[in-house]
Image (tube, rainbow over all chains, first blue to last red; front, side, top):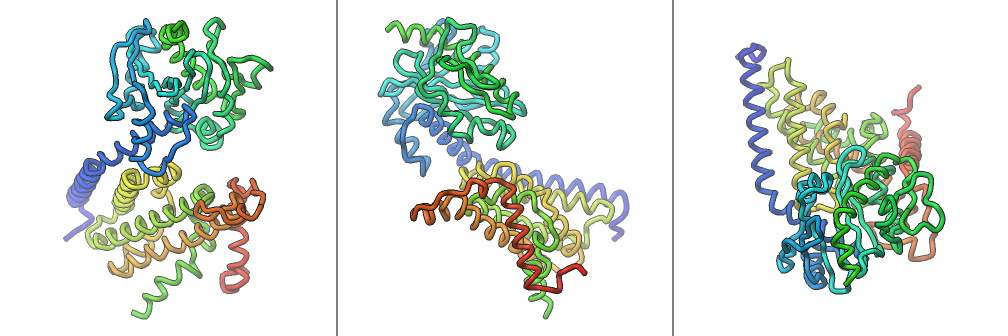
Length: 241
Length: 201
């Protein structure tokens, strides 16, 4: 057979591409449940890390069990700060990054949204944030105490920031540690600032940006401010109580 | 088939992809901070090179010559995505740690190079062995580099404290990519002083 004819080439490549696509689609379908379970456990692990829990993260089951044991409730709040829904904690139901992304439009426009608050038995609440970094989305979790204004801890993740520069929002424990003991200040122009060149001494609602990662720091700063401001009414209520 | 032994040994020693052909350097700098990651990466590359060579060798008589690179690319890409998907399902933490470098196996010149140079002109079994052996040659260097980097950089091996247990202060430079380059340079030096036949005149 003439393997160099045009007809043969076209038919051959078509068959190869269809076959490969079928194999990949099958593999993706077959592995999806396990991948989703891994992703969920990872997200819960990040929520727990933000809340400064010390837990066994060796297996998905251990993470889920620890979460279920320590979480008091997981509620959804709207712009007025009122509770509009609840996530089933017995199933360890959470808002994944795709859910946060879906809410991000409402949060940015300050219109309608329902965003989750994870409340733990020790009084810590974890608030998710979501925004755009330099190359892709950045998201994370900020843990606050009972008053809703004192930051207990934070954890961030990203889709495709540069490793070693923007990637430090996740990989550098020193960057995360800066959040501990800081405050959210709704009376300030910006509730929380990530300051390029270093935060002013003694300012309780600012931390240093990452050098060499200006755009990622800016993106994270914006993500934190938009989302925390979206939680403003809820947090103010929490403080009064 | 006296050549089979040669097929297996050559890519590991005399024609090692990293130290002699200087291919796949980029990923070997990135994934050698820890032994565990290096082992998974080595295994992934072995599977991708082995199976891709096998498939391309099976198809070699039917592949239209004008689009052979594209067909090779499709096969390699399929293998890389499969490996990535399986890792995401069964070794999520390691897949996260290796991040883009699993996907970038496709750009590793070793894979396409071996298919083009060997698998398209040889029978299935030798092609498979050649692919696997090249993966092993690559993985071997990866593991040697990762061994020193993890031992001296973090004081651990496979995450178990070894040097740090006896009061060793971690060498931060070992964690950084430049040190991997220096280590690979040292391995090339050692390799060439042992095997004089690969030294350039």
